Length: 200
Image 1: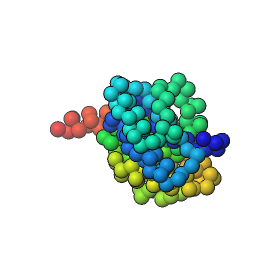
Image 2: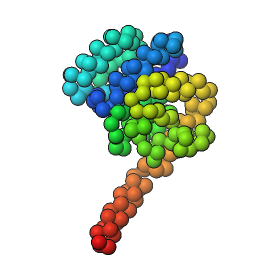
Image 3: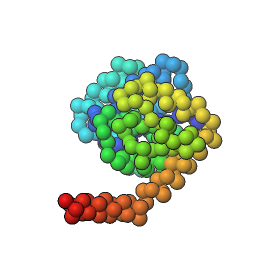
Image 4: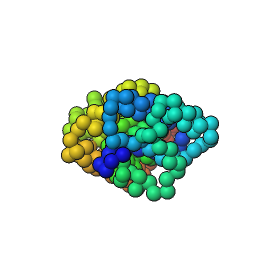
């Protein structure tokens, strides 16, 4: 990859439900379309050799070993986010609040998530919000062609637009997921539960 190339970062544990296999197929599509100067990094802690082995077999079978890297656990995630062009969550099962997506947005990185990867309260994406408010893009769960299309859409934007998405993501994460805001939301939830039980 040449200087200034695109880095697609997938952070989190290496589990089938995280959808790494969907990302590999999307990389195959991008490569077949002639998209150049990109690398996809799985910065993931291996949760067992079986899935990692299957993934590597898939990488070999799809001839994407030149653009897909399995780095294992990364000790300096801020540096990984800083090097990334985009952070992807391709979860194929419902996910809770993914810390990696909040971290990526706090680091001013655009994110692309599957429909099961994050809710509208975590990633602002069309059609829920207008384009001038988005912090990322969303694609149909398990659809590698839709993921490839979302990546092309993001890469096609001017750098200024990509930076604006990142800046909005940081503002969103800091405003809604700081310690005080999270504490307030948690206490409100507890109060609502208590109130419902008292009323019953």
